[in-house]
Image (cartoon, rainbow, N blue to C red; front, side):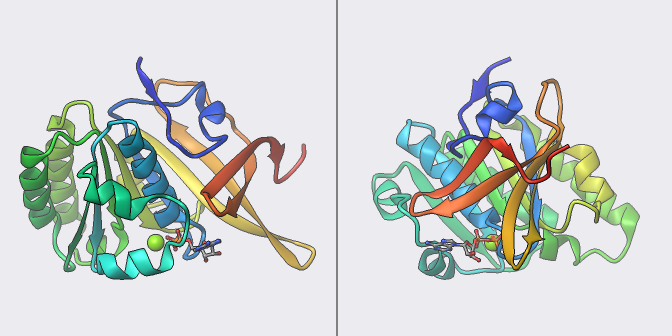
Length: 223
Ligand SMILES: Nc1ncnc2c1ncn2[C@@H]1O[C@H](COP(=O)(O)OP(=O)(O)O)[C@@H](O)[C@H]1O
Ligand SMILES: [Mg+2]
């Protein structure tokens, strides 16, 4: 199984040397935990290493994202050089998202694709069978793209399972935070990763000027 480097320092060591290429990974966590940073860091690392990336934000303008993501990720440089494209859409349904994706994927040979985020889009569906059907159609589109690895972002906590997407994704990575005394510690946990061994602990991660770093040796809770 071919693995890829996520570009998130320390993370690949938790997953038997990296995420299998062409997997669909769900990134979950509450607001402010670093999901957008995670997604962009993943894309920028790929773009620096000649893997074309597509970032799609749903319902949030790209200009916003650029304003608040203040890490040394070379976003401007990589987009100018044509190694990465950043796309924003209004709040749309899955079928419309599929069309936008097919259009973008037809034009570029993308190897890393991030969708930020699914949460508002899922809330557009009132009835479960329709959501299920559209989700399954959407995944058919996703799986047609050969050699692309996907990160799909969702708001949520590890204990608020969105059964559908967790069930269908190849991997689930949770970002959370805990109070230790009067300050917050951040923890990353891999709760699902098909076809590979992975850590079962909650590992410390921190932000610095380059984005997110995971500390594989440091668990948030000791057994
Ligand atoms: N230099 C920085 N620029 C932006 N956010 C930073 C920086 N350093 C740390 N952060 C943290 O990153 C968080 C934003 O991360 P973000 O990826 O937008 O989270 P999410 O997408 O999960 O809401 C902020 O709440 C802040 O705690
Ligand atoms: Mg975000």
